[in-house]
Length: 271
Ligand SMILES: Nc1ncnc2c1ncn2[C@@H]1O[C@H](COP(=O)(O)OP(=O)(O)OP(=O)(O)O)[C@@H](O)[C@H]1O
Ligand SMILES: [Mg+2]
Image (cartoon, rainbow, N blue to C red):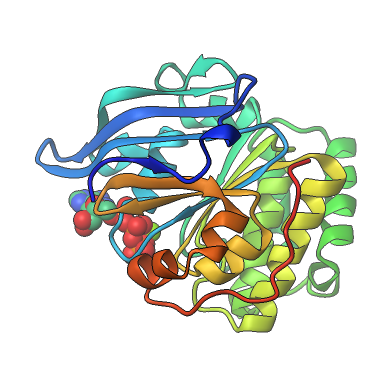
């Protein structure tokens, strides 16, 4: 399937979205076309899941959003991405972070030889926070992820995969994001840890209005917590809809993800 289909035309955004990806093509090394006409909107206050199989183009889309493709000899060749009304191609990644668009890249990249707390502090320093703001940020992160408070003096490289993912997310939270851009937070983690992380993301979304764009191969957990979702297939955005609609379509689950239908997952209303 190469054309984009909407499961719910009525759910089209009525107000200006926080993030708008409009028909982008992305290429690596001027040769490898990874995205073809990908479009999606993230509304303020929503969790939007970007789903797709291995190699579908999820990470490329998130790197395009965060203006990180040039660092990998990639570029957006056609289309446009606007965050908070601004063309992201006119801002460098650090400027985007300062405006609240904060990525957590694939593979929970922590500084292994720094402690958990030092890792978190780098997230605050990166956006020019003062000492008092860093202290307040640490309090917020430890309230969100109490396990990190217990492990604050441990070297990040010696903590579990789940704790490293929480550290990576916590470091992003230190930058006071408005839009958190998360690449496969569930990767390689045990189901209970994955639930823990998604529950906390949902809490931050509900309590603080944090908007989240999360790429996942694990569609079951992503659709459990997201409000809406976009499915990528071979570099094309092929489906948009509410998470509930996508959960209910057994054929979609099977076709795109090779998984069973998700049962008993709560429907979450957009904040
Ligand atoms: N740095 C790169 N240089 C060249 N090609 C790349 C690069 N990164 C990704 N690609 C290609 O772009 C396409 C999309 O890859 P991408 O990593 O965006 O997919 P993905 O959906 O994130 O997959 P996964 O679930 O495995 O993380 C793939 O064909 C991949 O081989
Ligand atoms: Mg990826």
